[in-house]
Image (cartoon, rainbow, N blue to C red; front, side, top):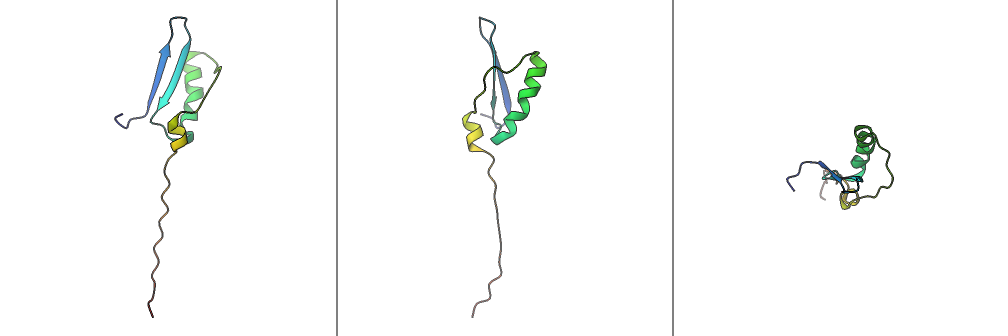
Length: 70
């Protein structure tokens, strides 16, 4: 993967439309559900999280302390 977030839309031979986000970590993928419903004039029938959701965006917490030695 090239690091760019993507939405992959698939239409089956029966006309069923499915979409999957790739490269969107954590809950960011949820922002696209409504966008896809609007673009496709459709309602979500089922939804599941991908491995990217579980990875989430890493949060780094850094602290620096000055320590006086005796």
